[in-house]
Length: 75
Image (cartoon, rainbow, N blue to C red; front, top):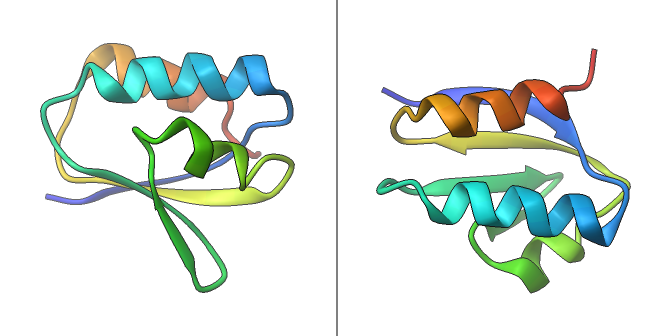
C-alpha cells in the first residue's frame, strides 16, 4: 500500500530531522516535486527540494515517521 502526503521543509535542520526519521524506516520513501524524484533517505536530495511543497510516497508504515509527516504537512 502506498501512502501519500504533501509536506514542506524550509530549513536544513528540518531536512536533517526528516531524513533521520525516514532512514529508520525499512521501506522505500520518495519525495516528488514536479518531475523530480529523490530518495527521502538522502540528505542532499532532500536539501535540493527545500522550500518546495513535495509529495511523499511511502511503501510502508511507521508511527514515528507518520508523526514527522504530520509535523510538516501542508494544510
